[in-house]
Length: 132
Image 1: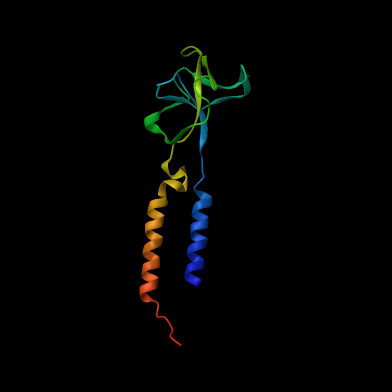
Image 2 (image 1 turned 90 degrees about the horizontal axis):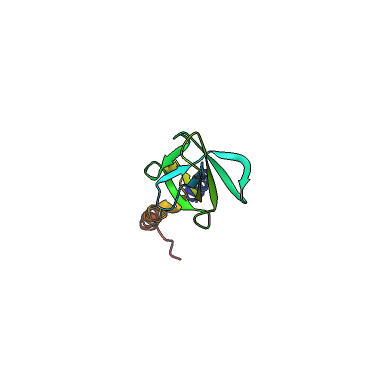
């Protein structure tokens, strides 16, 4: 019983720490692999958040990010403002992380189920049932 309680506490801690640094950014025109992540404070352009494009900095490519997912309603859900870099452009609001450890625990659900099934099988084979 004590072992099961420790296992539950450990799984709870892992779940609580698994939602780390997921951030939002603005993916450039549809089909582009560039995401701009520095938001221009609370500035809105036509009602959508504005992100900065500072002369080819403040960006990631899709190959550099993990847990990538769309947040906006497609093209026009954010705006990229060029500051001495390429021109202004509408984009798509997305969420991402630069570290695979920040991804949610859902990605590891099959592995967790397999491990718990193994622990359960081991416990059942080692436990001696009392007969009355």
